[in-house]
Image: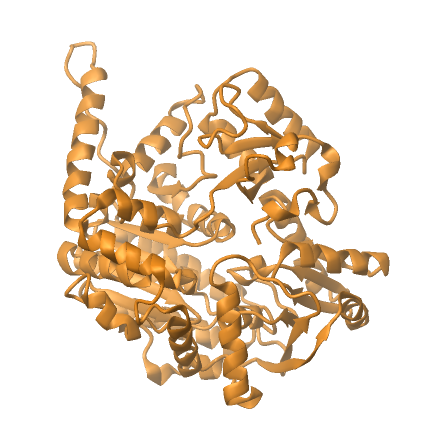
Length: 598
């Protein structure tokens, strides 16, 4: 099926480009072809990156042991870059500079094997924001803005029209149509769902995955029900199309145990090569915290608030947004100094302001309490002496521990795992994975639960796969997807392969009243959504699950496209009505808790 999609992609793209050229004729009447995409120029980009990394190392305020870990990881990535294309894993502890080390591997690898482009896919928009910022500051001044393509729902390159803001918008959207750029940063959803799609517009970019370096970050977030066909497609992509696929994470899933399942889809199976050699013992050297499992009795929000208020400086991570808001409100009532709240109920601009305030107070050694959902666990660089974590999947707990004593400046940081009085979990396999964590804790005991042990995580994921029925084919959706693939049913396969089952909408909130007013005014002057407007709206946008038809939340949402009705499934941009529904100081969006993406 992937071979058919790759051929389909080539034909669709060629047809679209030829049609575009036909209607875009010059003064001489001849067709005007689209200019060729910029070249990767891996060697030149490497020189820029190496210079930046050397300067970064000089300025580092981390402990020598942490700097040594980062240097060893970077050197491993540089050395592995000379390997022939294939499937790889990159297993590295949190806080070791994985994002830039991956780029170093990709550029060395592209140079050594004459590969055409680099594609980085990450699961969360919050990670994309900071990754693209780093990449642009690094490479755009040398290669130009069109060197890096950002492709996701908030980038203004997806589903929007041009608006007379010059050629930049049009060029970006054209590049996004077929990924005609040397460096692409996108979401896991955009990349992986395209591999199983059946629509021309979605498949059009697939042939550009050939002879590319494909970096997948935070791969532990891949839903187990989709694991086998996903691994098979990526393995076949590497085997047949001379691409390299890198699975990067601090908590590497036991995907090798799914080899026999993968072989049913692709003869290449799943046999990746690890980039970091065992002799470096990165995980053993990265032990900077002591984990305490407080599982005897559950904790009320009042008792947690009292403990945190006494602690002065700490990070507390809970599983649901409503829990984060409840705990924050209790601390607010206590008059706690240095109190911050973080979740995706805050728009990106608000989150950036919160994190800047947190880092400043930590640097100044002032009291700082951050109450957060798991959004702080993915790629957020903060360093607390004490972290409290509500019981969760083991990989989430490990990510939380990565925000404790991150720079190694203390002899030991403390991570305390607790059971909240009101338990609750986001949808999907989160609750099942938490049950596996509890089962492992009962089986092994707290003294064996070493979060820096890859063997512990291998056991954890194997238990998780067994519980969810992935290894035995016991899950109905996995069986249904397998059947659709075996029948070569492209439409059914595309319908079943969804990383996120629930549709999401973008809600522009009045975090910055002046900006919100300007965005509202611009929409009132036009009935169409433009790329320029989306880019301006991006820092002020909160993502929610699409409410059900009769949900009262619709009363507070105004569609951005005036030509469509609120409940129209094609409408995914809205303005929030009612300024009192967004707390600009602390809590962010306070309306419609049932629609929150946890």
